[in-house]
Image 1 (cartoon, rainbow, N blue to C red):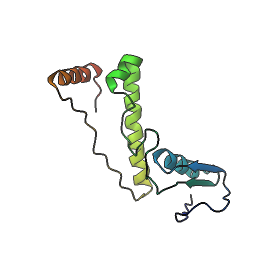
Image 2 (cartoon, helix red, strand yellow):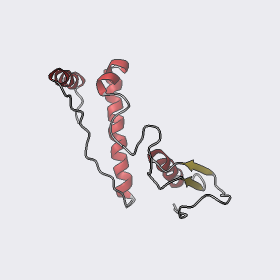
Image 3 (spheres, rainbow, N blue to C red):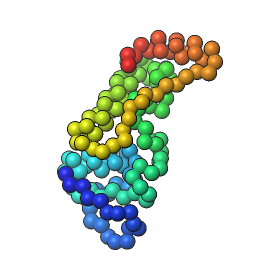
Image 4 (cartoon, helix red, strand yellow):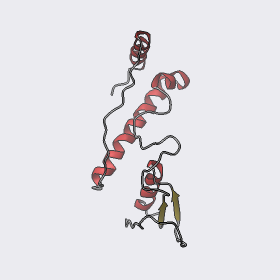
Length: 139
């Protein structure tokens, strides 16, 4: 896999490629990297600022084991087994990100500090602890 960069400038010429990725955030970088790694053709990624500059959609550079809902909400909507499967999937995705960085010697600021949601009231704490006990997902 060959990576080439063009210094930031306005795109003032035609580029030839098989796959064009627009946006250098988490999703765009992952798409471009996997397409190049899998030799799907000539890949070009364009970004209007610098790589990782702004958050589009929901990614915001966060790679963590969760969906847009907390585990209890996922459990209520989809059931216990699908909730556990979703959490396990997200854990694997987080681990995969670290593997890519380590196996390819990528110079990265990747950190895995964890995420904690903390209730602000006694009632909130009780609900949170009850939820954790009901879900019984090991971390």
